[in-house]
Image: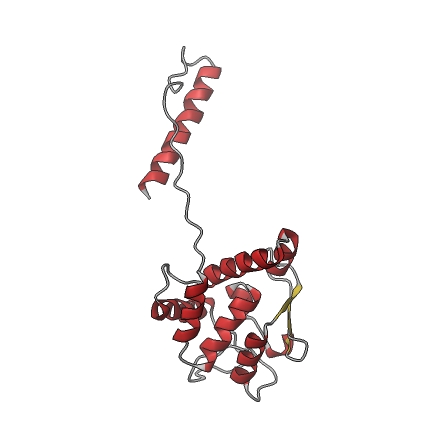
Length: 197
């Protein structure tokens, strides 16, 4: 946006003229009386408790219910959700094993609420292997990973129907999960480990 653009120009001028003054290319630091422009801080979007319940009310099928409860329960990244295989889930113990990702994602186990376990169990039905999430009409084989974009499209639509104050993404649900877990435990290190940092 405009403010961040101006902030970058302002910062570059401070650096350049400060360098020129120190190297004696100019006699005075002409930026000494210039006000620094602060970058616009992006608001960290999170869902309220009311919006979380509105999302539950806006669910229209078993797949959306499983996805929503999974996000509320685990704070998984979109890539981790897309790569989630039935074999990684222990419904009896209510755990999911997440292998180490290609980026900074650490290998870890996350835990399912009873709602999440029941929603996933109902969605996968009698399937016992393959990727958890598939398109509604099963237009691709279960052994082909779905795209991150498809999952984000589902999540955006869910948030729109629920009337959320912001555009819903998997990351918004991840931040909501992190906030709720910190509020519950007051343990930053635990929340960091669960998030795979």
